[in-house]
Image 1 (spheres, helix red, strand yellow):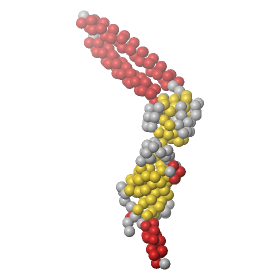
Image 2 (tube, one colour; image 1 turned 180 degrees about the vertical axis):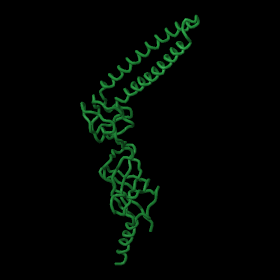
Image 3 (cartoon, helix red, strand yellow; image 1 turned 90 degrees about the vertical axis):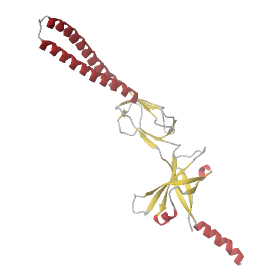
Image 4 (cartoon, one colour; image 1 turned 45 degrees about the vertical axis):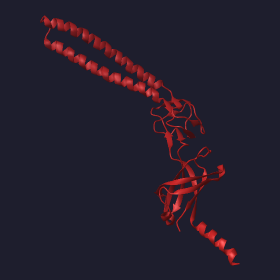
Length: 251
């Protein structure tokens, strides 16, 4: 009778030296995609569930407003360039006349000042034109990294407003397990500690490491958030999946 009870007691002790926690897969690199420019959305090239590569065009904003602004700046630049040419011609003529004492030095200096002012205005206008041309690149909103589109909040024809979330892009190459642990078990773990991870829906088992221990600020839970890094290898692991975390504790 005693021989039968001994294995049972050993199993209980082994289980007591292990914490089993429920976790969720999250992405450590999730980005809200928005535009730098306001304007009507010309076309959207992705949907929820689309896999994208860094540099892929996600959506494009209509350039009509920018086109009219560019034409206005170009027209102002042409006017200034013509003014500069006329002042240079007059300046050359006045210098010749001044050498013959037919006009005063003051008149020549005034033309030189006018030319300097116009050239300064040309430089400012050229800078504006360069900025507008740069803004054209931002009309095509591109993916900042590889990832999966998990939320789409825009349609063609709608107004794109800077700062408003248009898409959410999650990086599948930067996944973590997020789980909670009670304050009473905190002395059983440490940063860098190896743990066992299981995602049953994908028949996936691997080792992970505790990468962060964060106080839980939601209510009086007296618990902490653990973030666990792992390699998903070639498995189809996505944010939101349920995972089991096993942590060995000291006696």
